[in-house]
Image (cartoon, rainbow, N blue to C red; front, side, top):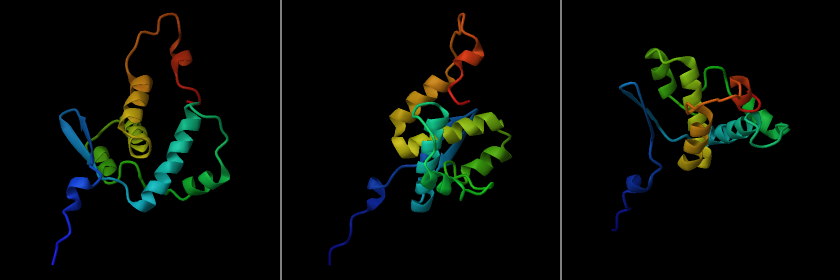
Length: 135
């Protein structure tokens, strides 16, 4: 009788986030969480001005199911970050990154993160003018 191959080599890898000497490991989202992440990606792209709104009613209905203590992008790593005293803005940025990492891929998430959060010279442009649309 033949055995099935070991699918571990083909499984979606964890998202590993190093921060300040610590490493946070985010497991791939479940099927149920993935639907919520897709809705979060739509919301994020509208909020950032990447795509025009409004949010479709079907997407908003999914967003409305996300509870206040639910973190589909970061999973259990969210609680670990809070316990470690990570600043809320940093956690929010990690969550944005994770949403796009899981829904659009590493390259998209990396590019978006670099555009949004990389330090840069503002020149004559004010910081308010440099903020992403919808922020």
